[in-house]
Length: 458
Image (cartoon, rainbow, N blue to C red; front, side, top):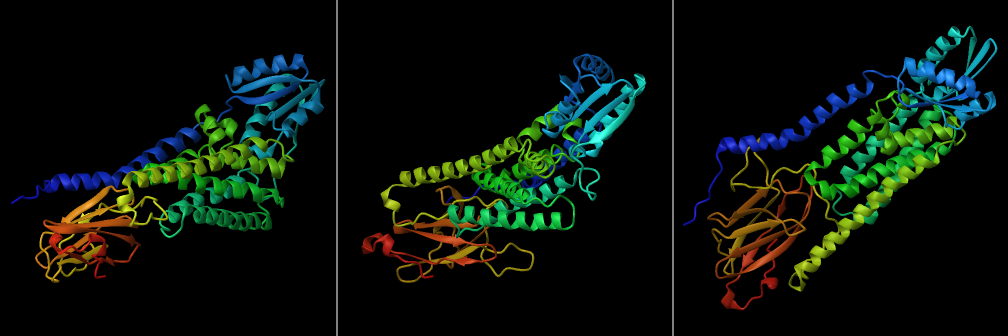
């Protein structure tokens, strides 16, 4: 008689704690280090400045490099008009023109009030050194309710994070195929963009320009589609990947602090993260007459394309698995979805007895009988996921009963076998909060009854 080898209780407890704490600990460390490192010391970092007049450009470059080594990239333009236009075209964050006793600094508060203050302070010192009176001209002022130039970031976060939550919710919509999920994403993204736009424009937090609707739609769609596509490949680590991408890495690099004042690492993140690119695009359509919008729109579109490609790869992978299963399993229909459950506990066999408060409740239970409807003891019950991977294996008790909990939502296959009897395979759909019962009858192989004809009692 074979005996089950059980792990020591301490080992099981340690493994359970490790699995439960891995994601919170990694997220804690990410937040602990990323946010302070991004915001602890804002200073210019490769900010582009244009100077009217080549001779003045050399003098300004020398002075700025002395104040902020590596903080500015200075170039010359023909005159003050070109300096101003460079800021409007978002080719530079500031333009400077000096003639005689007067100097003009062109800035854009839409790039962030903190950046405007740093630029004004630096060029005020420069003008004072040359005994010039400095005039600061804001070529892209923000609305009155956005004095800091950061309100667009908060609206973008509202379109960003719910996109990830939408994807996690759709993973549990086991009756939706991929097409329905993508249509749902498009519909919800459209709704979010409309509601967010009317709240922002209606309450005066940003200008009333309907072009912002398209950017908001692209942001939510990009986040949700990519999340849906990457989930089957990251499995239990999907929450860590999603929170890491859309909060830990995205928020510090989004523009809460002007991008030109961030360390180089976060500037590079800003260039590729959907949140940062959406903020850039929103600023372009709302404050800069469309300047600088093409690149962030292409980046958002690339995230959507990547998500679609991952969904296609997952579909191809499951098709190959179905082909490998062969014609002998053609009686089992292919599930409409194969998404992983991101929050399911470990599949576990339960003792079959009346359940008391606080004990795990079975997700799947049933009985196994022989052809004369007598209970079969020690019948093997194996539960597999849609890809054929074994989730849990148990055996029936003296009354032919079995019970299992901790299974992922979606389609699972239950295989019941017993020596000398035809095995039976059945497919079940598991849903949150619903206990599924599946009873089996196993016929003697000598009776000539096909295992496919041995339908479950329930």
